[in-house]
Image (cartoon, helix red, strand yellow):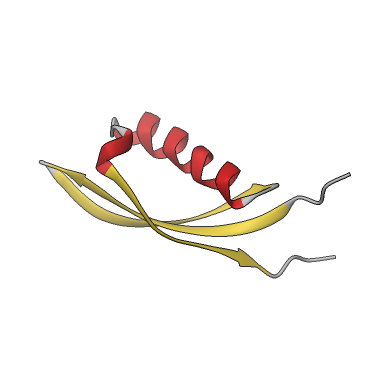
Length: 65
């Protein structure tokens, strides 16, 4: 069974009326899953389309045991 990890995702929104940078901790199996979760969260909360969200960095955070 796979282990769930914590990822720090840094992304930027480029909308005409909103330009900002976000840092968000996401728990996921793989970095690709964390990126999809960011698209869902930021898209629904800020009404941003996927092409308006730029993923700048995804890094794994040392987990707690």
